[in-house]
Length: 535
Image (cartoon, rainbow, N blue to C red; front, side, top):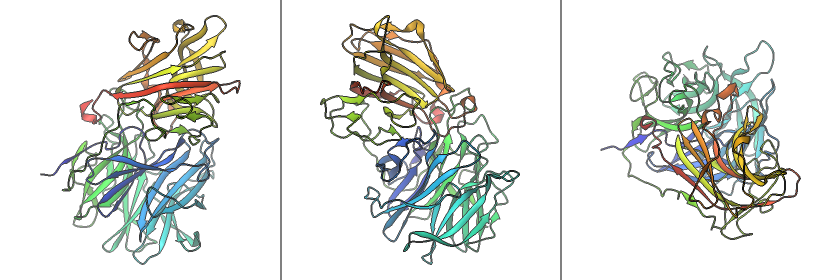
């Protein structure tokens, strides 16, 4: 009896999946935006069980994200394999908030997904979502959407393609405009496949909001013209805004060892009752697909809505070990699931060696910084969870802070922090930033000058966030009334970001004295079952 894929297979912030099979192994590459290390590669052997295999961009010599705006940086990686070599394309988005888009499209290669990877080669910058197609004749072609900034033109001006020469490492020959998309518009995310007599072009349309969808077109000629599926889209949730999944789109296909077809795609799970608010971010799901007699792709279960559960291929089960809930910082390397903002882990600001059994963070720039933050976090993956840490820290003034933060971006976060002021000495309380507006919950700031350690906890239950503090880890004091988890969402306040919420520990020293904060442990406990039908 076939097993079942329970969606989403990658919970929390794991957007823009690029799907690949090499032999008996399946891989999904996902976007990381401003979070570093960049580009996550996830691995499975049965499409049911997944684990994070590696992160690819680990050094500033590969990519420099300092100064990039929030929800910029690493967009839509595309992974492929040909003749013993892995190819990875990614976009480094340097600016995205004006009419112009400064886009750096890079290609790197490796014999193993765990590296070493070749130095990045910059290919073009005409648009984002690059994809490398390996044709059966040995030629290689780069596809991407093209951005048109001119007035009275569609910004998403269609899909373009140009040949890539692996010998010179450059694009060559004419640029072909192969597809303009449907009247739905916002055509992006091209993926090209060859099946039988046709080239099949899979694209994302409608934008990454509630109108997102997957559309297919085909042509007998590589350069077109491409005919749109007359029953497009292949998949969307735009017609059912009450469905458990929303924003379904950005599809990528694989064919199994036995000839079955599956599509990975992004989706969101809004907080029940909120419609759009999705603080877990864009997640990755998988759908079983079939081909019609006349050669068009369809969801195997019928209709246009993505399935919450779908039949897995008949492959041997291959589970992976789960991560421990608590990290006592006894290791020598800070690895998965942690990430920093824009910069790699560096002994100058983060250390597991200076004081064994503790993570040391040296205070650097503020939570508003796009350059040098001292922040270590992991995606929030559950609508009910508890995050706890223990801090040893002695600030001298209000310029120095350290603690536990629930973070969306530089303009939206909640922060339970230890600091100091003229009246209470060392003090503890919650500050928040919403749409760039800073506020303090002043009524619940407490003096903790005689505490030796600070136990800090955040609890999330649906839309409610509560922060607690304790001097012994046993008796806890509420530090706020319920706060709104929904503000840490792409769609809140019309900000149209692309990431998700993180639980993190951090330290700031706005006087640039690098005051150290020592964290004894970090614990993340998911309390709800991740599948959407269990919410």
